[in-house]
Length: 187
View 1 (cartoon, one colour):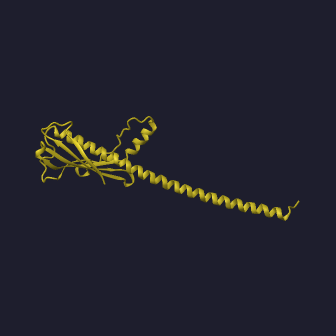
View 2 (cartoon, helix red, strand yellow):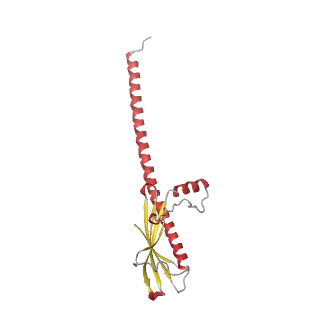
View 3 (spheres, helix red, strand yellow):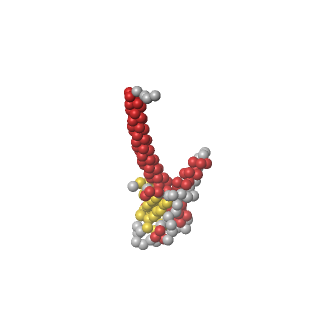
């Protein structure tokens, strides 16, 4: 039995239309996949940038702890010549040390062990370094010693945050902890 000419022409048209629709949907899917991957890359870059702030803050915290410990035996960096030179580096390759990493970072209060482990793994890819400089001595205030802490947090894909913090130590006067952190600038 042969089919009428009209019916076989319709079958061919249906096949052509089906192939065109399949091609269009496949192209749309590939485009959505590409855009989705680009969005993920942008989100990861932004997240890495935010996490470098944590790294830079960790270095500032280490620098403040160093100032506290050193101030027990006297004024830190008072003998550095010429004045205004860097007196202490944390994680400096110039001193033969590697940059401290954030691999010991702990997430406090995270209820999900999986998320805490994932975040800890992300932070292990970050490093930090900072420099401490005695910038001024204000004799009239007790005396008060002003320090500049310049800190950098470095993450994956060249993400970086730089911080500049001003800290002070008051010698001979009453102080609640020895350091007054005054200003932080991200640049």
